[in-house]
Amino acid sequence: MFDIIAAMGRMRIKKKTAVKPFRQTMAYRLLLVLASFLIFLYTIYEMVAAYRVSNTIAFVIAAIAGVLASIGIFYNLDRARYIPIPERKRYR
Picture 1 (cartoon, rainbow, N blue to C red):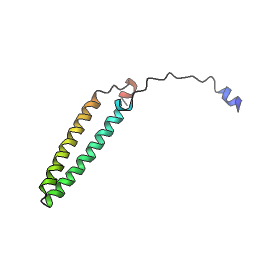
Picture 2: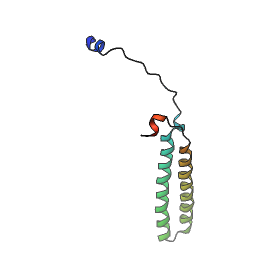
Picture 3: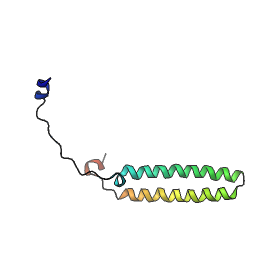
């Protein structure tokens, strides 16, 4: 067993890059976009359901929530544009 490890050669230690907080990553912003999109779809469903039964208050509440969800989508997509991406990952 030790011969196999010795035959592999010297293991190199890679330099670790600085770890960014999760809130500053692209994955965080895209999760927020996904959550906002799902909320937007749900509010569209609620608006249609409220319109069919003529419930004006529920329709207005769902419309306001839909507008806020769409603002959240565009805000997080805009903020995702400014996240620095390493050169080697940019063109994948």
